[in-house]
Amino acid sequence: MSKGALTAMLTYDTATDTSRTEASRRMVAAGWCTAAYGAKAKASGSQSASGASWTTWTSHRAYTTVDLTSADQAGRPADTETTAFRQWAVVITPHGRDKWIGPPENYTAFVELVRSGKGASWRLNSLSLQ
Image (cartoon, rainbow, N blue to C red):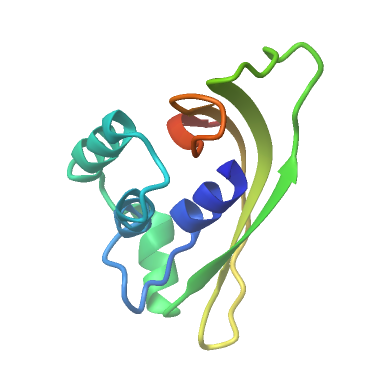
């Protein structure tokens, strides 16, 4: 579940998106996160600036591809019936419609997933990109 949510949240298309926030809003609207995380994502998105990378991507009418590799390490908390933690190595690569390929962005994503009980769907509850 965390892989799908992260992929949706980090896939951008400057031909249709006005900022990186649009992808977060799509992920929230798809129901892949808790209400609390969704409210936080919406609030922080309204304060975010686009940045230099976005401006460059826009000039190439770029979209991104996202590559996620599990980076779970020994010592992470054990999963419980209602909480799980995941770590991902993230590579976001912009591809311009003019055949330009920009430098990839590399992050580590720390994800907390929660659910109401065994058998219920997991939801993204917190995310840190470093």
